[in-house]
Length: 161
Image (cartoon, rainbow, N blue to C red; front, side, top):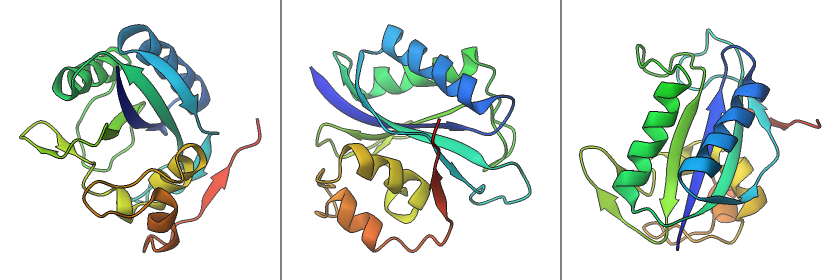
């Protein structure tokens, strides 16, 4: 089995419900969710005139390889109504693959590890909750170390639900 770390998020409709639906669909179609962070709220990154996002990090165990897993995630997004109309725009659901084992991959459809994760506090904060000692295979730093030096100034608030 392979281990992949995902970040799921959204800011349209009812994000708490949307994330629950996404988790159920991920578990049903890609493999077992082994661990999930709390939900975190943050202001929109990149395009700020939109509602705050809710995000959650997941660790999954999957028999799938990276490209088919990414396709399955995109299919889940499409099935939940995701429309890619505006870069950094609002979305009902966003499913990002952050890591896949120790894979380093650069294809037209998938780059691993996710190329911007070290610059985004809203990614690193929930990921550090479930995998603080995970080592980035390119940067050779742990998630906790990346979070400590993250240049992103946006506050990330843990929800207590």
